[in-house]
Length: 176
Image 1 (cartoon, helix red, strand yellow):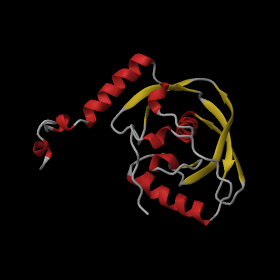
Image 2 (cartoon, rainbow, N blue to C red; image 1 turned 180 degrees about the vertical axis):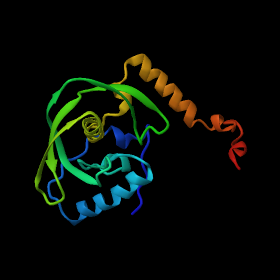
Image 3 (cartoon, rainbow, N blue to C red; image 1 turned 60 degrees about the vertical axis):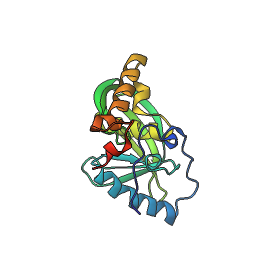
Image 4 (cartoon, rainbow, N blue to C red; image 1 turned 120 degrees about the vertical axis):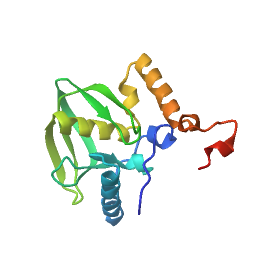
């Protein structure tokens, strides 16, 4: 089943995802379907809410093959790391975001076994970013007020039909 990635403005991205009570065939199929969606979008992670599924799981691949974390939870975090971060739900934009450099995260895999990972730098950032999606938090929420305001203005300009040469007063100008 092909998934469409939801973008900024879609209310589903602001909702807290529900914990997964039972890891069954439906969850396995969801993971199977999420992985190609992540690759097609050229991402390194994709949370279920980004495709409209309000479940606490995400898939990721930092070059070692696809993995999944179900019901993830950060137990510890240390340090600070500033890095340019983008998001599949805010395409075409990226921002310098400060996050903890190292985290200890736990969750479950598709077999239901507990997974415990000590992550730093990119992997740590990836986990924190995807966990944000599970909590209804977006990349822009990590910006200060003036930066967020400028980013939203830029987003509206990028998404406006006028920026594609169309005229909102004349809908026929949007036709090819």
